[in-house]
Image (tube, rainbow, N blue to C red):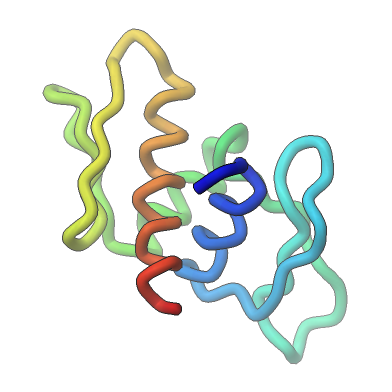
Length: 102
C-alpha cells in the first residue's frame, strides 16, 4: 500500500463500509450504510476507539506480550515502545483483508 489513504480505504472496505470519500488531514470520510445519509470521519490510525472497533469487527486480536496483531490469516508485528506501530499494524492487517476482497 502506497499511502495511508489507500490503507484506510481498504481497511474500511474490510470493516463493511458502503463507500468512502477523499481523505482529509487525519483519516477518511466513510458511509457505513447506503441507507444512512452523510459520511462520518474515520481514522483508526489516530483514534483508539475506531481502531479497537475495527479490530473487533474483524475478530482480530493483539498479543501485547509479543506485539503481534492477528486478523484472520493476516499477521503484523508492532513494537511495544512505539504505540503508533500498533495502530498501523491493525490498519495494515485490515487493509490486507480489504485488498483480498477485490
